[in-house]
Image 1 (tube, one colour):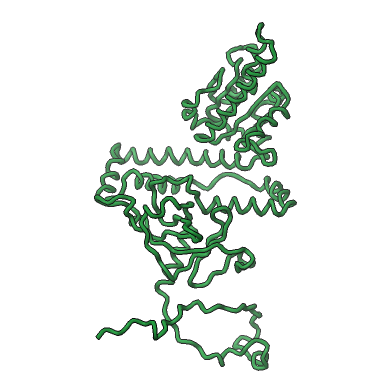
Image 2 (tube, helix red, strand yellow; image 1 turned 90 degrees about the horizontal axis):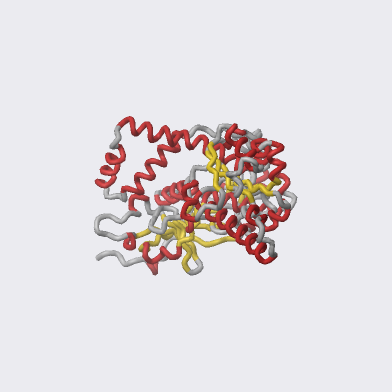
Length: 443
């Protein structure tokens, strides 16, 4: 499974003996370079402000004990001094890993001459970095064993148990190719192509930067070919998770929520769009207003933009109708159900009432955004609801109750047709207005 080519690119190698040709790290450096990769050698941890420069790095190799040479110097033998240096070393590595996650999710290989269990134990104290119960993007191994086995052999074997990293590297390969083709195609049309589109967007009174970003995104997706990857060898890991059904269910909910619901922390706080979900009081609200109407135009401010909101409420999974044949939640004509969103909840949005609120009144209550195609389906269902026709009622006598003699003896036009299991259907038509509450006719 492990493909050496997936790791080709720029590698950052951090070791305090990186400039010593006789040190063991020299063997790692040579292995990386012999594979055709470029090495960025560092003898100390980079400063936090420079971590942003690592956005295109393929992988990182970090020596856990960056103070090893200093600790061996004469005069640095006191236990207090040694402990201080070790703590500073650990803090610098953990700080680097936390900053790196903000700009680049990439494999990090921590190699050490110390106990692997000790290093893993130290990392486990930082739950945002390392989870002992789940394969991590951080690999801890004995440095000499890696040198003996071969760095890329170790990376390939490790990736056989890390489906998320395998998918990441496979997708990046396709993405980088598509990104280069996109900008090359437009560049050959005109070096001024961004200005042409920018001007066109301005004439439509839309925020040009945001709209230009969406245009690039659409064109990029259309150029990305089908992924060349195979995840079937990893499926046993999923089966192993089913040994604890509650843990498995929680994992599936989290993954499915990540697919269809973007939390507010990942959204631009000045971005308003259809699918935005708010929580006010005890109710959920979902914005249905189209993209083009969620923009502040002219002298208007974003705070004054009006949103069209459907009201929803959370419901229990035990009372949620589910069709096991097709794996779908069955809905009434006057509602749409979103699941899972916001910590795995099931939220039912009713179509009968559409509320209007200003962005300024609800922006602090936004939970996140429902994404297509789940949002698209909800919008289509609401559109169908708005245009629903009224049909004449059929007489009850035409449909005998189940179990009656008439029902048992009733013949169909298709005598060999298979039996269809039916369930009671709730009347979802809007109730007629009471005559006493109807508005008086115009005189």
